[in-house]
Image (tube, rainbow, N blue to C red):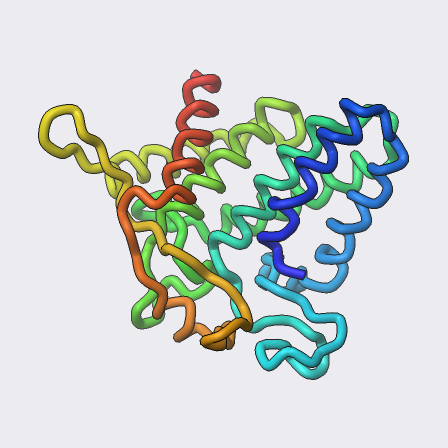
Length: 236
């Protein structure tokens, strides 16, 4: 399992369960989040590792835990967006709802501890701000702003996290948004991809995450920016 995969599946599964009146599906959705909560959350930082291999056979996986070795910013962003988007479809009386809200609270607490003090942004590898080659990354920053702001708006998170979202959003505007000729606007600083395994093999090391190309106006960054901007306008 990768954190990314929870965003790719669970919000859509939850919307289907809600619209098609299949409340029993929420038990399976909750289970998918719980698997990563149980196995991938680091007790020291509170962050979640990018991937977990139950078999412990992948080359990127630790032979004892099955975990990858790094806290990739966008993976954590996908995960938090998955939680806030999925929760909006949960019935109020579903027992999994409280579990997912608790996960989101733990995520928010961990993520704001790694928010850069000067810029309000987040790094490509979240817990290694001072290490060589690490850089402030736009898609993860946009995802965190969105998840924190929407979490507050919908009552999942305490109001204090809105201040973190506002700092992050101002950082995005000042650091990543560039005006071009005419009315053109660009979002810079988005890492194009990040994965584990495959061919050529991605070993999940710190060096690997820093080796991927950085782009402007990548859809994964622009999409997250539009979500963040809409939430911040709602907040105002």
